[in-house]
Image: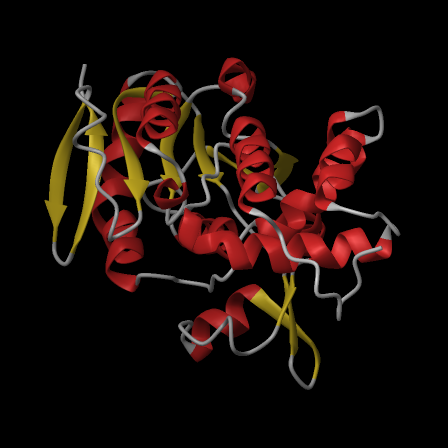
Length: 285
């Protein structure tokens, strides 16, 4: 059995086999420099299951019980560091420029729904931030429109946290006191819960971004946020994910990615739009 103090290490062969398995199932690619990270996360689980080797763990993943174990593995190997109002210039560009533009397009199209997708939403900070912006615009640019925010992630653990909607002051640090009071109820010394009217705007779903054929089941969107996720994919997966986003966006609407991410090499159907201290990608057509 491999225990926490065991001298047994993950061989290069074990690493490649597990790395390729995770990649094929999630699109997340671990370079050789991440070998220790993967070894640390998996060795804990092997010890809990009283398995003898990394090879046995891979066989478990590939077997009949693999579906449930895969959920655990995704929880372990995905990164979920986030916060409310993350990258303020981009959120403000969405609030002041993108939202009015795409809302007008939706109304011209004859639609009465404004739909957002927060892809890889982690523990809910991003979709609830977008819900705040929309709630504050419901009597102006979104007047008469139903707001629907679909928030997806591969990790069921973080989705459960997001559904509960309780947060500490650290992840709320970018919010103004007025916004905190408007959108949260204080439940304890350092526990703040998203108000029910905000929760109603957001639907959380377990979704794997490499399940390309299932994108259409989510419907069409006016804006898609997928921030700080594409960096974990290789070029092949990036291209397919971005194409999936393209297909689910209405014409002249937006894809918002992380401030350090660029999709220009993979997205001929988008044009780069520069805002003040932020960028976005507008779908052509």
